[in-house]
Image (cartoon, rainbow, N blue to C red):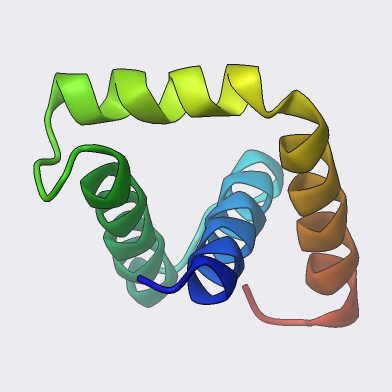
Length: 85
């Protein structure tokens, strides 16, 4: 995935994470958000989506905390602008 596209996927994933923390997602939204999560893990796991991929993602988040904060802030702003998750 091209980095700009991947950052958009990450922002969307963080939107899902925030939305799920605030409300019960519809079935369709939950499925969509789960697909984003798999895509994120796959990116960090070189195509794999298991525990190692999850740990690689969490390591990346820890090493790039400032970027993650920016992406989460963008996600929150985008979420506020929409009425549908």
